[in-house]
Image 1: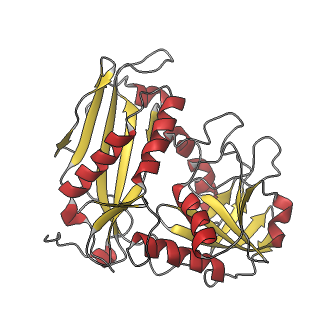
Image 2: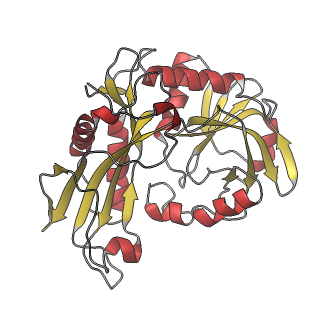
Length: 341
């Protein structure tokens, strides 16, 4: 298939319109059959639920060109299940898991010319989202909803190479106990914007959010889970009911145990043990792992032994192994790679 005439090495990480997107409407208590359309605009009432009460959720995943030229996605069934669970929490009708995966397949096939070639460092980002579209003036769920999937080619998240981040422990709370921190609701990201803008203004790359109840335990950043590596090479990730279950983080923990033979542990991680770790990383779809070199706790600098010049050795092995699986260079566990073309 002939690819679009795009400078793949310099497209950056931003939105670029592609040819087709998928749309399905929920009306009279049921989802319609859905279809691919060309129009990238949405028409809705000024009183639509999504505009008034933020009744919306989303997912993010990627399509890749593998080493042998196939176009694949990575564990889309987990994105589908997470959106299904999120919709239930937000009193929205859940889009069926099998239909979610099929919709992603359709959109990627329709925009295959935008899937960057292997070795370019770029990928096709896929954004499924679901929102209340009917008018709502009282605080209650909408009656009608829309599920959509669009794609956009994106360049490497780290232009110029991966460099360790400097992050700060935030005074803002990301999620409350029994709140919506464990689901991918749009409102979670809106409330994190002020905190991340503030962090950037102060010279930091990201925030480390603590648990809202005791402010003694590590949770996550505004858009990524944490992984830590101990000085005896154990891979640890924080455990909390208000942390979003990252698909990348779950995959990395499996890779650590089953591919690299490392001991792994999901447990509560306390702020006062941050000095005990050898490596730290932020994991998510966009970058896979973003290494952290320094954590600042209200003026106190915690410098990770892995340093500020490159990824730590174990973090690099995790990154290389997972991206190798995604790109078809390393055999994947059953069900992880979905071949589309």
